[in-house]
Amino acid sequence: MFALNDVTKIYAGQPALGPVSLTFPVGRTTVLIGPSGCGKSTLLRLLVGLVKPDDGAVIFDGTPVSPSNARAVRLRTGYVIQDGGLFPHLTARGNVTLMARHLGWDHGRINARLAELAELTRFPLDGLDRFPQQLSGGQRQRVGLMRALMLNPDALLLDEPLGALDPLVRADLQTELRDVFRAVGKTVVLVTHDLGEAAYFADLVVLLRDGRILQQGSASDLWHRPADPFVTRFVQAQRGPEVRDNEP
Image (tube, rainbow, N blue to C red; front, side):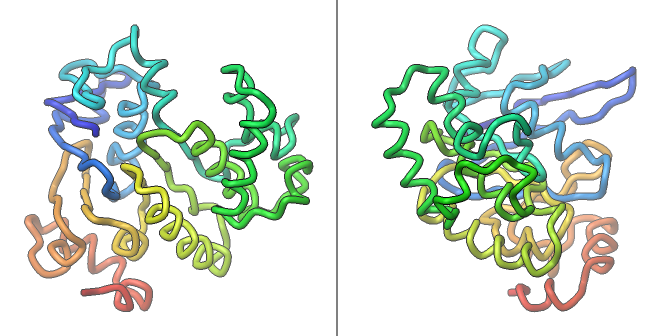
């Protein structure tokens, strides 16, 4: 669904990413992991066309992403950020249906899709007319996910979607989110700094450091067959009950 071909991104004269070459399998979940500042979020923004590479090419569904087609790519790609990234002046309903209304969907189609998504994400129907500040953190994240799925996109990109939640809510949403991924069958790219969370979601784990890929493969590969001393250090720094429970 996505591919990066020798992509480089530079900010203020300093390399933030690359050169990176990577493919993202259709219908599978790829998790990007690594320490803060390693390039995970930059890579995600490149995929959705929010930033342009300084070198190399970003490919979506076989076509290079360019300024002329970036909007079309975004319409086929759902994007979720931490805490939902909701517009505070819109209700949950208004946030979820914003792009559908902008594209001229009729009320019947919008309401039918909204009901489907509320059921899929287990969001209470009586919460749709509340504003973001009236919702819990978990509810805001569900609204952000519904908004990303509203147009039935081909791909779903999530940038640390559960990072701002307390541990109990986060654990519940991890289970629900994985169920959603399996139900919708989308190509998913998820960013996290948490190895246990990566193991829980991923078909493919990609570990980055200083803007480059150190290792990609299964979570088991990182644990048992590290390709670099930093991989070992990264795994050992996170080995706790959550990781051990998910370890193959």
